[in-house]
Length: 156
Figure 1: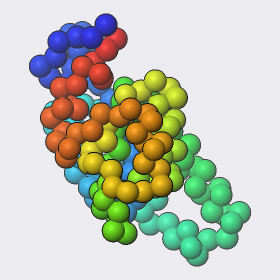
Figure 2 (figure 1 turned 60 degrees about the vertical axis):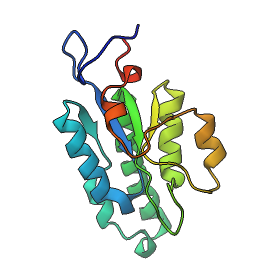
Figure 3 (figure 1 turned 180 degrees about the horizontal axis):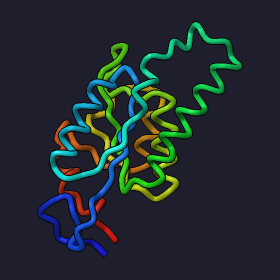
């Protein structure tokens, strides 16, 4: 049942949770998004800050697999309990609205769990474009206000 909302809480006063997903190159931007959403009354989960410090190119495959699995599992747990998923997609390597492999995994996980998917910016030309569009996300065009007041995350 959809509720009419004026804030980020339901009529029963429950705070809603958003899981932000994106390239770790966008970590600072994800922290900024988190701050904005929390100021609006939402709970927010972002990837572990520790992952920014990991140099995967200097890590053997066995250790890489162990470390990456931990980060993946931790963030998927945040997505599992979230009410919605926000893809923080910015320009990277000349690709507008970049969504990498890990972000696509996270979006698909949220989609499989029936979570509404929100995409912050438009998608540029990239290999996963059809898959992202197939999840029928809501595009925010760089504006968080539509996410904050979305009835999609207010359904009970």
